[in-house]
Amino acid sequence: MARKALAASTFLLLSISLSWVGVAQLARAAEVDAERLQARSVVPLLTWANATAWIFLALPHMLRRARAGADIPGTGARLLDFVTTEAFKVSHPPRFLFIALTTNFSYIGALHFLPASLNTAIFSSSPVFTLLLQTMFLESGWRGDAGSQGWKALSVGLSVVGVLLIAEPWHGSLGGSDLDEQRLRIIGVLLSLFSALGTAIYQVYFKQTFGDSMRPEEAEATPRGVQQLCK
Image (tube, rainbow, N blue to C red; front, side, top):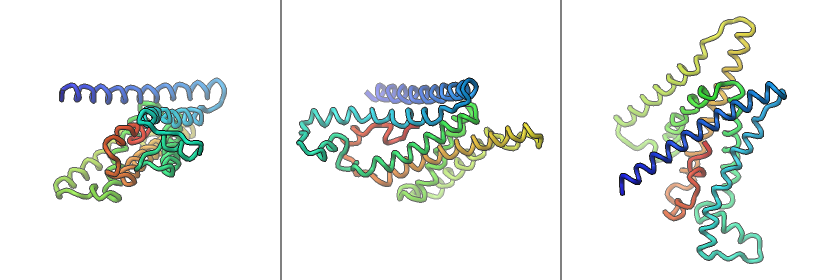
């Protein structure tokens, strides 16, 4: 049983990673072709599609509430019972949607300046920001002995060095075209880092807002993407 669960989790993780890389590659290709053929950017369209597609993840929860015998009175207010739980209130979606839209726009926008592989590599620094934010805002973030905290600090430092080595901001001369290319590259790197920061904010804010207030059945009904963000 444990092996099946491990295999299923590994398959799910690999599927998410593959789909994420595929989305980045296709988005980059669409942006390059749109810029070349129409002198237009598809960043707003892709941001809208990527951010709003997560709405469909609420359908299993709605079906579960309907099967549980939730009634729909004539008042429109009770319709919210199908998209809320005791922990997840109607005031939460606008806040998380704002963070998700901003993060997605930054990530897709970075593809206008960077290759998909480089953008994905820089975005992978998100755990660094998550570690720093949880240390500052979550009580569980600063628990642990000095040794574990030291290893966390070391991992953060190595991650920052890795991002610098990937971005290579020192490349480029002072020539006109090379300087313009370097500036565009820096803009892309900043957008990618901002999207990584937004993802970390989303995750830490989610944990700070809900903590362990969700019952197991509510946590299962909450879409995995809502808990971890649209990557």
